[in-house]
Image (cartoon, rainbow, N blue to C red):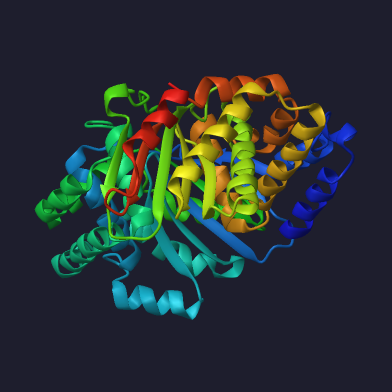
Length: 452
């Protein structure tokens, strides 16, 4: 049913540019989405957002932790990944064999993950299975089985994974650019040396204290997507999540990384035939008034990079741009190329054009349509819809922002897109991974000076 609704939205998008300039999605459609979303609180004041999908047999239940790595001390951050994996493996009341047998019986799984600003544990299953599965799901949050054998295994796997990931130059280039973008002490990033050192020092007691803190001190909310009688849903959630303590919401305060023109790029030598280039720049936060205009602008930049660098000039097999939607936004441009000098020049030309030339209304409508189409594809699946709802509730206290986004997008003007390009496409920090002496420092310096 959700796919049918999403396809209906897409049909609304594929209309004339005259209409697109006025309304991407009708007010009736937005009202339908809002009316299908119910919010209520459990007796312990835990907020629940329930998006009803009529006649759906699938149900997704997520418990969101409204803090992530950025809220933790440096030493706790590697432990967060280990704790998430241990929570997935079992609880005191549902040890690993018992939990595995239950999840296998219903062909489902439980996943826990913590990002920079937001974490969650989630489960997708058939609605009729919830009475038996919810107690197990709640138990991995309430009392995960944090035993020394599993913890030691998980920590060793984390260390091996950390070391192996940076052997991949596409992953390593992010480490390189982060050194000049974040520097020391920013809550969004810890360098690899410190991450590995912290993993060596983490003990089982650290994980137990970290879990106790998450349970006692971190605000949480629940998101459900599916088709359940409201009274029955409330009954199930009350029965299984009454243990959650009442906690007042806290807003994370994060400053944008400081720009240092004397240390704006770094080149790392690797014996590889392809250069990996990543540029980062400060962008508005997801709650800022100009975030959507900037997000659309970066989408346009990504399309232009793809068309020019990959399609027309055949300089790259991978090129894109994006904005990471955090309290402080992070803009990213990534390109891999065997011809880095030509690629850097193409990058400069495309960015310069977007800053200097205002789009026509027709051009903007075309980009807007493609952007909105990708947006609605996120609403096709229960899991991606629940993820979007989780983020909307976290940053805007309700699901309304998610549903109103196309209306806000339709109001963006060519002037706002150009202003976003002029405001944010500057003060880049650059990271490069390539063979020794293959990437000339002056290529980086010329690019950075053009947008200083």
